[in-house]
Image 1 (spheres, each protein chain N blue to C red):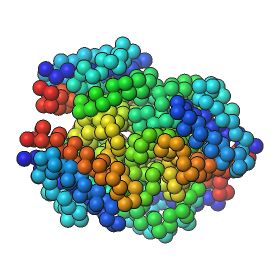
Image 2: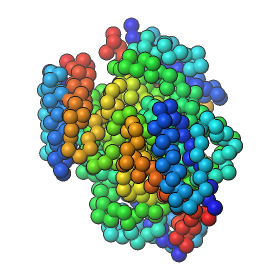
Image 3: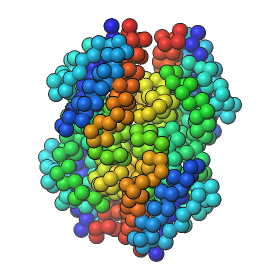
Image 4: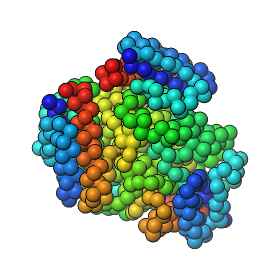
Length: 158
Length: 158
Length: 158
Length: 158
C-alpha cells in the first residue's frame, strides 16, 4: 500500500488546513497517509515514503527557510528519494504574492532529488495556491493534489 | 523626458485593458508613454525607449509564443537594451494558473538583455497578475507598475 | 511498447546532436523512439506518444519562440497529454547563459499540460544542458535523460 | 558614496572567493564595499546599504537554507529595502547543477523586497555561476557583477 507523507510548515494554520485536504484526497485514492508538521519530521523518515508532499507559506516567493533547512539536511539521503513521487502547495496573503514560485521552489528541490512530479491540466497547474483562509476552490485543488500523487504512487509502488 | 513603451498581446482584451492602466500610471509619473499591440511593434523600435513594459496572457505558464518570437528577433539589437528599465504583467483565467511564472518569464528575458527590473514590496511582487476581467486590485497594481518603471526611468534617463 | 517522441529546434546542429543521444538512451531502455525536427511535428501527433522530450537552444533563457508557438497550438489537445512523461534539454553558448532556465521553461509547460516529469539526483538535475559542441559529459547526460523518460514510460504504459 | 554589502555563505571557500572578486569589481567602480560571511550579518544591517549582493552555494537548486532564514527574518524591515540595488551569484559542483536557479532564487526574494536588479547582456546573464574552484571566466563575471551593481547604486544614490 503506497505510503504518502504530507508535511507542512504553518504559522497561521492555513497551510495546515490545506495539508488536511491534501491528506483526504490521498486517502480517498487509496494511499496510507501521514500528515505532520515539518518540525516533527526528521530527514531519516523521508526514504520510508513512496510520495512526499510539502506545503509552505509564501515567504519571499520561496518555501520557508525552516523547510529549506530540512531539505539541505536531506543531502544525507541524496539518491534514496530518486523515483519517489513529489507534490507541493503554498498558502499566501495575496494573489500575485509569490505563491506559484513557492510551489515551484519545492518542485525544483524534488527534481534535484531525482523525484517524479506531475502538474495538473486544470486548476492550479503546479500545485494548489491558497489565498488566506482556504476557500472551496483551494480545498478542491488540495484534494486533487493528494489524489494525483497517490494515484501515481499506487501505479508505481502498488 | 523618459520614454516608455507598454506593449501587449491580447486576445480577450483583458491584457490590453491592463496595458491601459499601466500607461496611466507611467504618464502620471511624468513619462512619455506609447501603448501598442505587440503585433504593431518592430524590434527596431525597442532601442528608442528608456523603459519597456510587456504584458502577456498566460499561455502554458509563459509569455505567448508570438511575444517570444519578437524577443528572439530582438537579438539583432542585443546589447542595445542594456541598462534600460523593464517591467511585466500577465492576465490569466485562474489563480494558480501560471500567471506569476508568465511575468517572471518576461523579466528573465529582460535580464538576459541586461535590463534593469524592479519588484514591488507590496501587492503583486513580480508584476501585476490579472484574473479574468481586471478588477480594482489589478488596476491599482497596473498603475503602480507603470509608476514604478517611469520613476526609475526618469531617475536614470531624465 | 512505450512510444517516445524526441523533438528539437536546432540552428547550429548542437541541439539535434543532443537529441540523437537522448534517442539512444531511450531506445537502449526498450522504448520505440521517434526523433524529429519540431518543424516537422504537428500538435495532432502529440497525443499519440507516451513520452515527449523537447530540446531547445537557449534563446533569452527560455525555449525558442518557434517551440513556444507549437506549445500554444497544443491547447487544442489540452488534457490529452495529462499523465504522459515529459523531459527537456537545452544547448547554449555559455555556462550561466540561461540553459537551466530554458530546460525549466519546457518542464513548466509540461506541468501545465498535467504531464509527469522526473529530475536526476546526479549530473544535470533538471535536464541536460550542453555548452557549444556536445562533449562526453553532455552525451552521457542526454543518454541518461532518454533512459529515465523511457523507463518511467515503460513502467506506466508498458 | 554608495555603500555595497557583499555577503555569502561558504563551506568550501569557493563562494567566499567569488565574493572577493565581486568586491574588487564594486570597489573599482567607486563604491564603498563591505564583504562579510552571512553568519556575521544581522538583518538590521541591511537597510544601511544602497546595494546588497548575496552569494550562495547551490543547495538543491536554491540558496542555502541558512541564507533563506536570514531573508525570512528580514521581513522586520520589509519595505525599507525597496529601491535598493540587488545582485546574486552562486557556486556549484556541476554545470547544470542548479546554479542558475540558485541565482534566480536570490533575485526573486530581492524583487519581493521591491529591490532593483540588473542582468548582463554578456556572460552569466542572471549573475555569476561558478563551477568548483573559480576560474578566470568566473572571476571576470564576479568583477562585472560588482561593477554593475556599484555603477547603478552610484547613479541612483550618489
